[in-house]
Length: 251
Image (cartoon, rainbow, N blue to C red; front, top):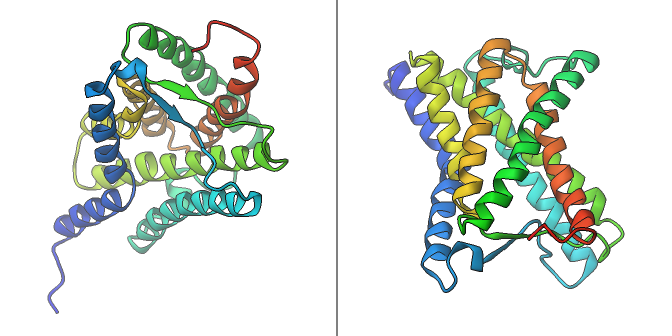
């Protein structure tokens, strides 16, 4: 069998990975945004549930949540495997041995840089009718819920940063794309699969994609991005429902 030219193989590899993972999620989110915008009350009249319960039975709900996390880890594993088959190991994209102090400090700085303005953008977008109302998962329905939400935050972080940053930017660089062009593609992809949150969610994550992608292009360190992303999501999943009961300004 005749082998495909390298550039064609790379394009097919990117297309397959994105179709299986976040590219398909982006199309689904765009349809969700359109449906919400055209429905009664517009975007602000609709809600989206984060990590919603999948079953009334505790054990089945737990298993569903674990399967969701496993799927995300599987997406990251697929991208890492294809990179490895192409001669690019985890260390080459910044997933070598973690450096606790520098990686930890960088992740906290990135989490603050993205998380605080992101919350403000959500509040403004919701007030303008450009965001749906986010309904957080209950923390009290099952004893295991907070732990599974932390796992979900880490699974989201690993999948998104490995696929959308480490894999995609490395592959586009190998195809000869400029850093700016590849960064724009990565950020647009990240923004697209968050459109189910509304225009505000898409824009906020597009900015996050620009910041995270540029950080990787300059430092080739993925751990700070994974840790920062996991921190942002964990605060949203656990801190939001706690804060929501205490203040009146959260929708």
